[in-house]
Image (cartoon, rainbow, N blue to C red; front, side):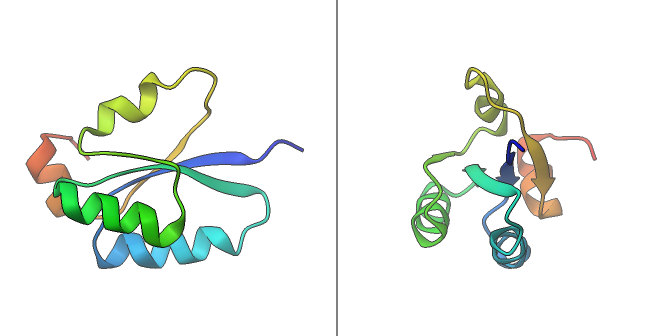
Length: 85
């Protein structure tokens, strides 16, 4: 079975909890993350060994051949990006 490729939007506390939970799911693989704060986004990706990170959630969807289950982990990130939840 193919793994569900996960993109996490947010790099704060709730995102940390979600990343930890996804690591416990053998069928899931975190392949991208996004955070409004560039330094925070890079640190989050480094901590969880996420290969791609950005400050623009739309860029996660530009990667060819990737299926995403997007986890929006913080309302603050959505407010900054204009994302409607």
